View (cartoon, rainbow, N blue to C red):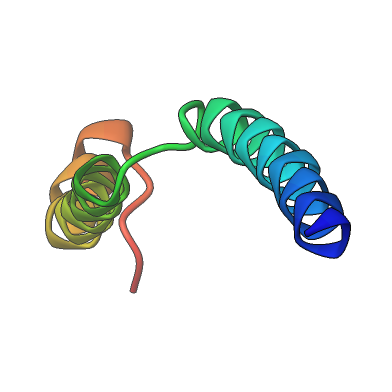
Length: 68
């Protein structure tokens, strides 16, 4: 019986440690950007890039830097 009590005591200690580690992990992960935020930023950057490439000739003419 003493052996079982010792094992149960160790399990409680281990579970407390696991719970504390999980709490710290959840806190660290909560500050990371979400997948939707990352996709939104990527889409915005692609849109800006396509816009620059599309309107580059017009912007060059306005600036007087027409390429040959």
